[in-house]
Amino acid sequence: MRGGSGDAILALVLVFMPLSLVSFGGGNAVLAAIAQQSVAVHHWTSARQFADLFALSRAAPGPGSMLAALIGWQAAGIAGAAAAAVAFHLPSAVIVYAAGRLWGRWRGAAWHAAIERGLAPVAGGLFLAGGVAVLRLSPGGWPQWAAALAATIVLLRWPRLHPVPLLLAAAGLFALLPG
Amino acid sequence: MPETPAPHRDREATPAAAPPIALLRIFAVFLQLGCTSFGGGMAGWLYREMVLKRRWIDDESFLAMLAVAQVTPGSNGVKMTALIGQRLRGAAGATAALAGLLGGPFAIVLAIAAVYAGIGRNPIVYRMLDGVAAAVVGLTLATGLHSLRHGARSPAAIAIAAATAVSVGLLGWPILPVVAVLAPLSIALAFVKIGRH
Figure (cartoon, chains in turn purple, cyan):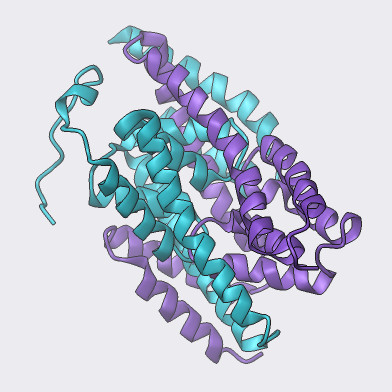
């Protein structure tokens, strides 16, 4: 399906741009919709290819939302990858930029400080919830929970430790687990 | 790495007091961050780099950005990058930061995909990905706990953070209704507290 046909690129933009605008809670919120569009509706990938691209997007560095680029690449080559990545990232970046500017304009007001201080515990709590939710969805079972807990303790004790050695150690340990 | 505590900066003084960071430097730092932040959980990597290591952003600002990011759509790492770039150098800073963060991984992910097309599925690779995911969850949890030490100092704030984490993370309740109840409650508590001082 390579070849960068204009129709495929237009279709990629029309799929990923609206999804960017409704992905409340992060890119994972629209994962099911991305899967449905690329496998069942547009046949950009087979179900198996989609699973592979998803795993790749998680193994590679950078935001997991690069899945959009991978699907665009599968559908229409490099141009498709660029179109899908821009369509998926640009609208949400523009919105958050506008929200951030609006927010910064009122810095100093008492109610502004109250909202920032009040939202902080909720934002922190959602952060913890995100970590737990990934574990609940993951197929790795109790070794994953144990490894996550160990990594948490290590990083709380040494906050500036570079995480890559930790990731490599975890990958190595899990490779040795009985299948 | 200097171990001296970050100088106290009050809200009004923050933008003027710090010298502006060069756009090329912002681009380079985010490019490096994009190319080395494995396993997702971008906000955790950003916290480590921007708050702990470089001190370009303080804890309270980081949590405030996280809050803005939570209520707008899109990938969290991308939204946080746009907000941090904006705080550092306005629109140009946000553009430089986003170009850096996304440019590297874009090239890498396509290169890996081209190679991977010839290898196919491998159970050991999938187990290793499980290990990477677990360690990244550790980074996420450590970031949340670390930033809450600064962002949730009162018992009420800690209770709200815990209620959020348990209801969304363990019980699997949807984010929007939970935030719709807990955020106004938490803001009201903060408002009362500010009024008393």
